Image 1 (cartoon, one colour):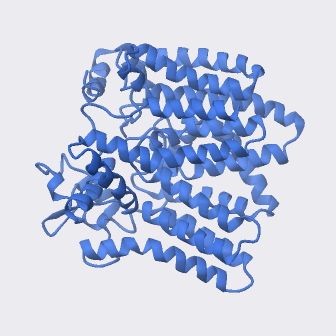
Image 2: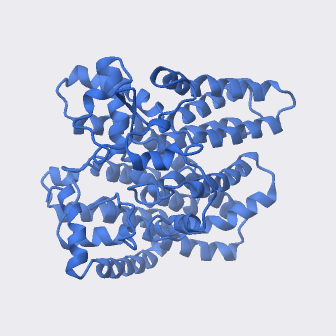
Image 3: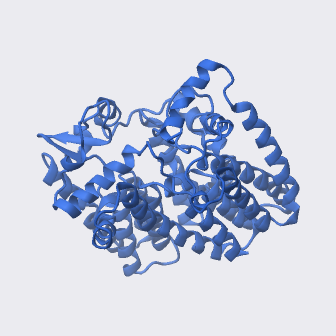
Length: 486
């Protein structure tokens, strides 16, 4: 069952290149431009890759003293340097799309699939298998894995750091490795510093002497300080971040003010991140709702330092995300800034349901888990085979359904490897979605079939009604057809 599940999920990921003829994410381009600049010009300046710069057309870049720079943490771009260098050797004329697909695959997809296999090997119940399927096929994880951004890799690295520091009685070597991983995660995504600080507290509380906390802190700083060196080379000093020099005024408004754009959590952000139609995590991935009781149960138990760290990080990251002016996270399917808490919630849920839940409650949790995972998988895979990057616009009430519904009725589908092999677009998209449902049935057993069928019927009815009806609204959706080259 593990091998079948792994093979099916890998096949789905490989079938979805997530590239579009007339749209490239500025988030990805910013990182890729820095990688190219380092490989091709031995420079942090990305001027050669900015054509006709205008604040209206160029975003996710910094501008300082007449030169352009990436505004992202340097870790992802540095990790992609050997990949782009090797690609330049074997294919010196490789296109931008080829380069992007290659770095995505090597830097993000491969590590994610290694983690997937590791998690499946540790699964011992259907609850664990279904939760992992929900995580990889029914959450923001799939959209960000098929994207050259830092969220997935940073999450993988910081979770490795947590396991090294929080399990058993870690040796000095494990503590040093944990610190190195935590520093690498911070270099990839600045917000990983929150999780790194939490791990430092865990190490400090568990240690009898200052040696281990100091070892963790020094190891972490050794890697994370690379970003300070980059800042010093590009701007006014090590603590002068690119966010202080954003080229696009909208970007500057979101990140340039205060400390990385942080403010006080707002009610609209809290509701939007949980149950909002635009980015609500419990709406897009409803299986995560089942993790809420586990948060309070584990916090009350106070026996597992790793679980306590996970609970603390869930609340800390949510508080930080709700404090951001741009809490929505731009064009993304679900709240991408909260991606790090998704595997933590899954870990807490599985631990709770396997070790503490009563037999009676498990029967209810099984039905709820199968149903919510099926809905989550249908929602995300339907978006992936059409358009998986809903814009941050109040014009939509639930873009994860509205945009795919519109595109399905227009017979417009995202690029698909099966289609490139000659399979008709509709059939290729259907195979991807059906494969996701088949994995749920394989891991959930025959008793999961009725739940999957009912949820599939309900989803079909909902998405059929989600398509825009009046002419004015339909015209607003045509931009996605242009992006897809239709």
